[in-house]
Length: 254
Image (cartoon, rainbow, N blue to C red; front, side, top):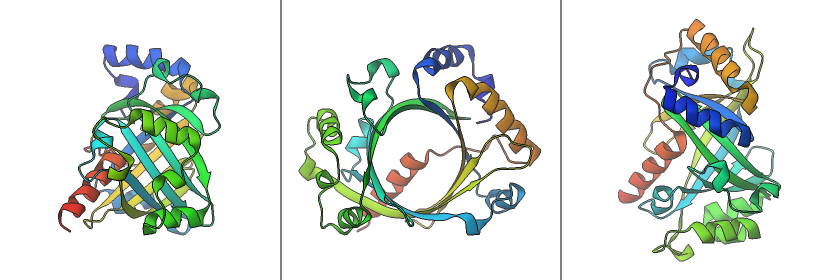
């Protein structure tokens, strides 16, 4: 989040090439464990505004889907329907399979953090909560909650040595999601606090913007967070990668 305006020339050239063809940019920052508690207060985040979520991933125990750039996720949200997502990353806009961009729930997005940026595409569909619960409980197969287009996308991208019967539900993990808007900042932000199975926690701050606003939004966000004393040079953890690694490690201990 802090370094988007100061990427090196090669990174900037790549980013400028990507932006005209993506749907959105999400700026992300992982807050260090040392700063986590007071950052919530400094940014005016009210814990009572948070929504509870459960997230589970579908992969092999040794994370072969993740290694192949494929993420399959099911999610429950308090007082809302669930959803299921199939994501490919990295995925350049020009490499998106034909016909996907016209589908509801499909997007191409750049995630940018101080550690760099990644372009991905994803297809998300709404799923009744009881069906997601069935997946988490082991009473439904993941294929039962995916749309036909998602199943086709998943089937086409599965590593050669992996079949649907090899996939396993990893999780769920709980998280709290709060939307907020700091004073003197022109857009809403999101704080997500993830509770990982090894007892650790991960706090991520994020803000979404259109591609044409990316550099302006990054500069405004850097000014905001630096002004609040947030450590913009803290080590960054990608929440999906970190969560998958922790879930896989918990399986090994079973």
